[in-house]
Amino acid sequence: MRQFIVLGHDAPTTADFPLDDIAGGAGRLDVLCRCVNSAFFLSHDIRESVRVHLVLADEFTVTFDGADLRRLNPDERSTAALVRGALDEREEAIGHMPVETSPGVSLTRRGFEPVLEDVASESTVVQLHEDGDPVVDVAPPADPAFVLSDHHDFEPAEADLLADAADHRVRLGPERLHADHAITVAHNYLDTGGFAEY
Amino acid sequence: MRQFIVLGHDAPTTADFPLDDIAGGAGRLDVLCRCVNSAFFLSHDIRESVRVHLVLADEFTVTFDGADLRRLNPDERSTAALVRGALDEREEAIGHMPVETSPGVSLTRRGFEPVLEDVASESTVVQLHEDGDPVVDVAPPADPAFVLSDHHDFEPAEADLLADAADHRVRLGPERLHADHAITVAHNYLDTGGFAEY
Image 1 (cartoon, rainbow over the protein chains, first blue to last red):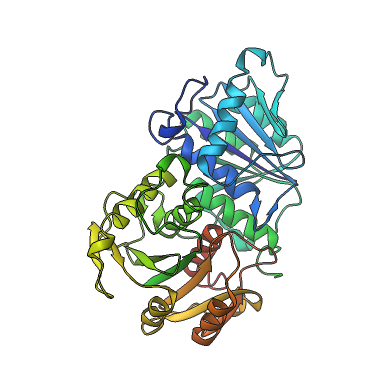
Image 2: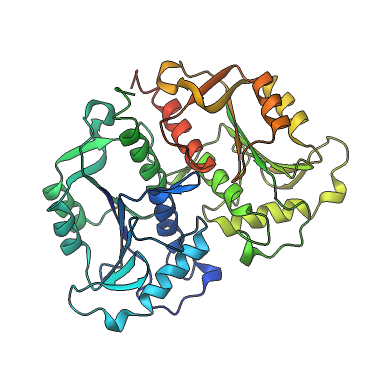
């Protein structure tokens, strides 16, 4: 199982945003939608053994589970509609109990810390960092979890939580990438057994 | 200079499509828009030494040139608007003369064959193919050009043209990727000097 946590700092927490303006009025939800695309799509296939957690303004989390996903399409707008559909049920999300809002999509009332704690309990947490070890020097873990941020850097408190939870600190290359591109590169690194064995 | 040619088999050739339905009514223009995103965006930066050619239904080509690009945003909708703006000038695109329709965006009345011929004259053409050599075994060329297809496979005639023009045939990994993800992986391969030297 590969997991990705993506922090949406300006992301909406209510369902009253227009799908025509996800890169503007909806707090750059487009970034998060592209992360979902990168995490799940193969050519004519879905990666089933993947889970993505979109943390919305540290208040709600929408989780996509590849094993159960239906109705996911590659375009940003339709993914944003799934997030909006999840937020439509926000009153049902009580405590940390997930509410399934579409097949394979669920909502919890959780911020970054409890989500990271849950994921870290079953995964090897990999921190992407420009000062990390070159990814080619790190053997790919069996159940990795990557934590990424939207168009903003991590807040200091988030960076501290992540540094505490991280088992590895790696960099994917010499360039700083968008979160969705980092997910694609991370998948390729894992697909090829860490490049070296490929 | 890195170049990417992307074939949009169902892409629009007139400007009368709605931006609300680019994954449907506009012939999967969303796929092409994501390719433009992957080709140009770094975190808080644009790759200037990149050119992308979107071939629309083998009739028109919209070229994005990183050296001159302005007004490119990462979301699909705003990139689709640039393509639509280019097609608004379709009557001005006569012969193979480019018409600049926005800074760094130009339209030509050309299909795949003349575009490939032009690009091949100044680049090392790399064909991505599941039976190709593992990319890690191929030294990254200085001026590579990658040719990709949208959600459809290459037509037999297109595959023949590409095979004739290709200097290398490589595969990026064991999985078949969407075109935009392949662009991201190709960039990473080139950024890291072919992984091995990284």
